[in-house]
Length: 471
Image (cartoon, rainbow, N blue to C red; front, side, top):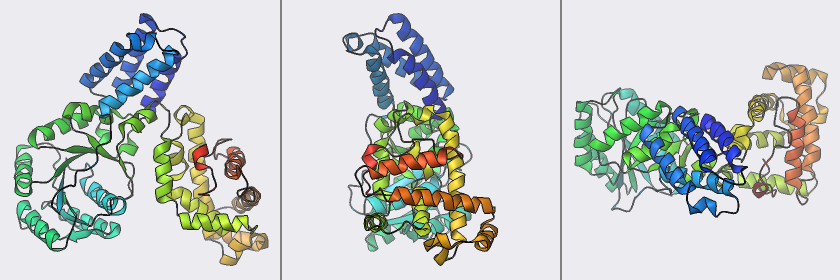
């Protein structure tokens, strides 16, 4: 997300941050470039005008002229205004009501409401420790009801069945009663969408809202619709008392215009954004972190939180203890590390949150090559027997042929994996020592960089390299 906007802004701001003194002319030129970058990112025109006016007003005043480094101060102002446009701070769901707290999700058809309902159920269950029930009020699409039932089972939420012969208000009122009887903390209501905004749709959802009086009414909007997302959000905001917005499919939008427009136009906070298809791919929306990503300063805080949440600490500790005792790093351990990295969204997902990575197009291409190579490695290891994984030195020519056939690869691919594993085994011996994890990741960068893998020197930031989570 924000790739093109980030690249354009980074180039523009790099020119001005190097200036020892800011003048009306260089500020004017930079703001013109920033304006063009925002418009090309599909940010709504009123939002661009408000943003540019805010930056200009602060940049030509005392705030910059008295700064020790005017160029860097200008960058700080741009970051601050970006945060302001997106809402300044994260606003969490307000669930302080007599249980069940009812959350209504509205939006156009295809915006991702049903998937978002499941993601939100998982988020509330795992991170907020809530007992969650979901219900579908989409009586027009039986497939949507079935989809929600399947997803509810996957995320461990209670599913309340819907009867398509009943009105949405009747279905949801029954769900509210059931939620009370089953001591449910939060009831999530998935509503019907339409291909476009129409009077019947708005009348129906208004009646549904009035019948259940939800504490939260979230508008789910497809981030890839760009400026149209803001216009649609405005229409829903006029019809319903929205309390927040969820940007779905944000991982597929390289421009980011919707994130910068929706908050300003609706006046409602963006509370979450969907960053993938999996049910755990829902992130709280932090304007300061998003602004940092847009300006290519990274988002290490989110990366640390993701590591804490997704890395299997028990397995990581087990491996760390094994290495400290001097035991070998076998292919089963290697496979586990690949799985841990995949859980983190792969190399691309991790590096996207590191400072400066947005400017390195060559590194991005290398990341994609590494992702494919890691997937191939996993397939090769999965084609081995347990004995072969634990004692890779015993893999002879006939075993290599069998493994290559089983994984759909070539013998040279198997040889490459065994060679890389041997190199990694040597590195892993250093993990228990001070600074060992950083050395290992640098070594991996050199090992993979020449073969379409990680860029040389690639690794984790110092805050993540203490050896606690070896993945």
